[in-house]
Image 1 (cartoon, protein in one colour):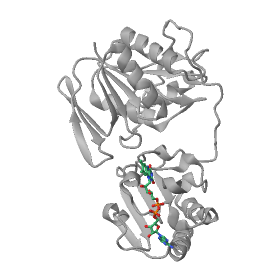
Image 2 (cartoon, protein in one colour; image 1 turned 180 degrees about the vertical axis):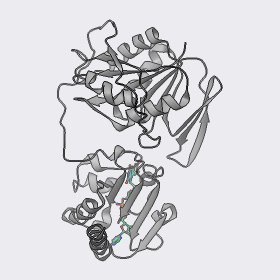
Image 3 (cartoon, rainbow, N blue to C red; image 1 turned 120 degrees about the vertical axis):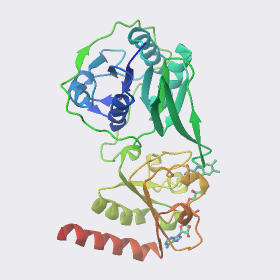
Image 4 (tube, protein in one colour; image 1 turned 30 degrees about the vertical axis):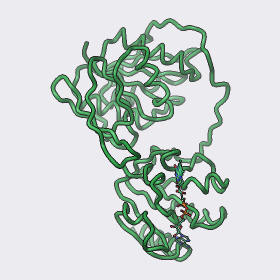
Length: 321
Ligand SMILES: Cc1cc2nc3c(=O)[nH]c(=O)nc-3n(C[C@H](O)[C@H](O)[C@H](O)COP(=O)(O)OP(=O)(O)OC[C@H]3O[C@@H](n4cnc5c(N)ncnc54)[C@H](O)[C@@H]3O)c2cc1C
């Protein structure tokens, strides 16, 4: 056994950033040749970008039934490809796709899995793995016994660095396909929003905004910053914003360079989703709000005054530069 297999998530030829982060991680781990496996229409089209990120061979399963996600069919295919390629390490993204797929592959192969990993390094023949537990309040060091070692990487934590290689060689592995137990019949997409788990900047709003129409203030700030908009759970539950905005323990776990929390108290369940942010800025009228304990920068003030002033100042700065 040698090498690393990266399970690549792509849609119509567009690779999810976490897959490129996994490719860069695979090269850095230096476990031997790096192979990728991609599913669905447009999978072959990702050969160039994957080659630039160090992938030598791209295995593609693009025909039906691989054009739509099915947990058992995909897991069985990944397990068969792992048996053929015999990698020592298999990397997934800890996205909804990876979180569903990786444990099933682990079960089929009876192989160890470390999920939602924030740090992974080669340690001789082993991997030194770090992953958050207790909603980000503590970190575990994990060693996976046996091979292959399955790891799902938290998005936006590892760098994605193109090295400038040639396009990956594309081939189709032979896999046996059983009738799926369940299939996705439709996918509703919202092209207008940036996927929060991949956003490098997020402006997030909570109950302090008082009413759904006030999210306009955050959208204006986000537009100047080139940021995605997120929210605390109660405002998503209230229907002020779609559920896809909800950040936290029961929502999306984000790792942006910049997280601006506006009118969010900083309850432990919210902080669980943002603790990997590189810089947290909190705007809150209560100086004792718990969000200030995790914030790198805090503004104590009324958001209805602070946010428009901040947006105007940033606009001025952008126009002047
Ligand atoms: C099992 C479980 C899971 C949960 N999962 C999540 C989760 O994933 N994500 C999540 O977010 N929550 C989650 N929650 C809910 C969580 O406990 C909090 O209730 C929630 O995060 C609070 O949301 P908030 O900060 O928007 O509202 P609040 O707690 O009401 O805070 C509003 C804040 O706005 C400030 N404010 C008010 N007016 C202004 C103003 N004019 N200017 C500036 N600041 C102002 C206030 O000082 C306050 O700090 C969960 C709860 C449970 C029990």
